Figure 1: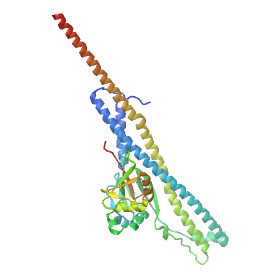
Figure 2: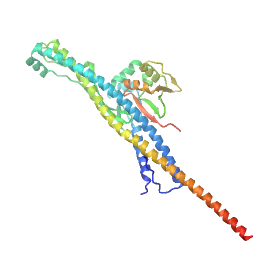
Figure 3: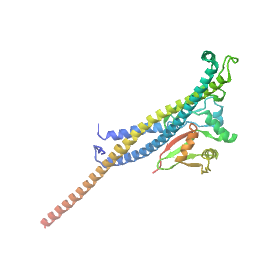
Figure 4: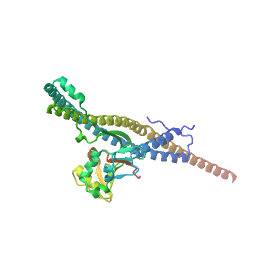
Length: 144
Length: 216
């Protein structure tokens, strides 16, 4: 066996495991808030086949702050994109629903620009404290 | 100190492959660092929540015990025990998992927590003291379930952080410097080879010139 196989094997093996772990929590299909509120055990199926359950308390909290049409358009879990070497995180949003939720939680004006909501990492802490199960992380590669 | 990677074939293709590998390793390292920082953030948040829930539980327990001792004083131990033996309380706990940056964490939720009520069989023999004690114990139960979830999360996040930290350290201190050193070693080797080649050509040129001079 050539001696240069160790680091290559390590990197490749690690890469495989790490990507499995990183992508594990991404849902195969997101569900709307209206749909989830009707379910007895609200959940979505993740990439690895496991189920990600939502707390009813959180769903009720979201439903209280949104109108009916917004509840239908809001897809859960809200995906938070984390890109390396950046002090902020982004949330992709089709409408203004996510921005409205974050504005209420952070108690400040959050703007959705070009379908992207930008929040800073210390603010992420506050969001995650309130929306533990209704938000999900995604780690992204930054193009060199 | 980082060890040099042994290369079996000191070729340009191998160098290109190593450079690609280094780029890949650096990118993975960045992602691992991100994941580690997110996991630490989650852990710290859980620790803070855990501490506050523990404090709340202690207060609730002390209130519940105080209330229970008043109830016991009012009813007497024997009659209180009799009442408690026949009373029952049905409650449902929803258990599930949530995924935090690749870590599966359990969560528990009491279904219809506000509607939870103890059914005491004999209403005539009991007092409002017992009802108050029951209410306080129900509060304690809710908090215990909340604490159980947080404690387990803490344990699982801690284990994952340890794992990710080891991987991060391996990449930072072994893999990336090793690849870097090998690339440097190969680059220097190729430069040396080029210099030798240039010297050899000069020497050959000199020999040819000398031969031509003798020929004349």
